[in-house]
Image (tube, rainbow over all chains, first blue to last red):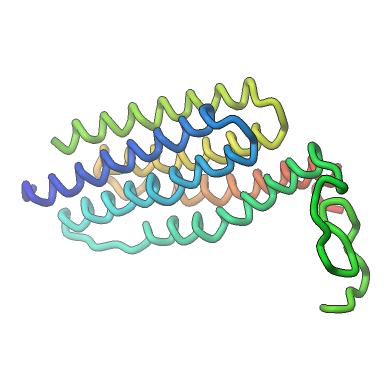
Length: 123
Length: 89
């Protein structure tokens, strides 16, 4: 294998390993649940992204350029915010009351506490 | 050199999985456990792709793609169960 390519692949693998470890360490280090939502995003974007770049480079040196690694990155980028939103809503529904939160400024309140209205006016 | 980097990354992600297990065991709230399970899925995806590089085959992409999809669906199902008391209403 080309030594420069091997160096590049090793660099991406080491960087992704460090970021994956940082993401999981943040999960036990940070104090609050809402703070802990911040930690694993590093593991998602930089950790898995670095691994996927390294794997694309590795299979490029073996003679086959493939793009389906990017599918995994795309899928994780699409689903990450939805997951974070759901986890935050779970935390709010179990630990915060409606009077702890600011007003929404709309006709109906926070969707965590109220059932959705049948026909909202501004929809 | 690439194999040394691979062993380093295996160690990092394995340690990360242990941290996630710690958070699942001691998490004060259900949201912490859901978050730790989701992080665990992400770490397993990275481990599978690294194992594919280690073995030199492209078979493990499909496995990691499946793990990503099942992990997302299971996270959403767990959250909906905690939020609404039911998964499909």
